[in-house]
Image (cartoon, rainbow, N blue to C red; front, side, top):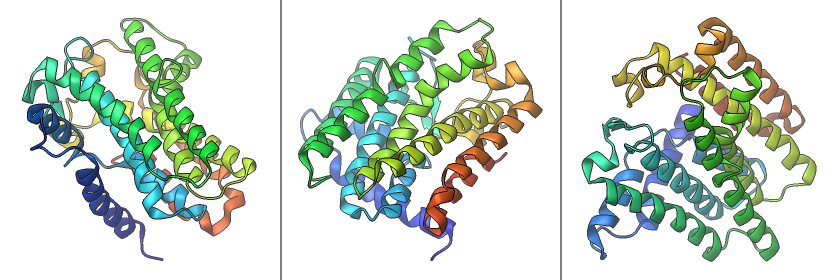
Length: 295
């Protein structure tokens, strides 16, 4: 087995080519919209969600070409959410993944259409590509991504986030927000990768619990990094949560306790993988990466 760094880098490079193929050509009309879609998706990010999908797919014997589609669908939903999140009506940010945000590079109307188009393309890919030999399972995958993306998932979490500015939330309230805003799409990435293979209900349940823990841990670490790291390291504006008076795990718990919480979630996630044995190694390594990135 190759080491984690080489494994992740190989998938990142290969997946970039997959995304380039699945996104509309920049020469296809309307060119400006298609160019902006590619700008928002390509050449940026660590591709954590696709890597989680690939690791879960490998764990359960999925064919790579199927996981490619599931991972691309999740990444397009994620990219659309970032484009909309950065707009003036949301967080009003000017930097994302080390380059100007989409509405700065293009304009607000184009950025809005980019998000709309990436969202619909994600579902188109899952619907038209052969991600499963079982039509019922393919429909289940579409439903899973829809639930993770909509008002009971990521979009609902964002609405809760916007409504919480300037408020002091309790820990359960903060967890509720981030289980939806950040965690649901991370869980979906893992489960969609698993669905591309052969998984029992018991295995899916364990992977879902792993994803729930890692989704929360991801956000806790993000809050710590937003407090401690600089803009160059993050690739986005550092300290913006504090500047916008947003409730975070750091503002609620402090740096030390927030880090302790991330470690506890990390251990709970690893415990959920215990029954998979050595086959779960890539997911364990991704859990380590998520929690201890610049931590």
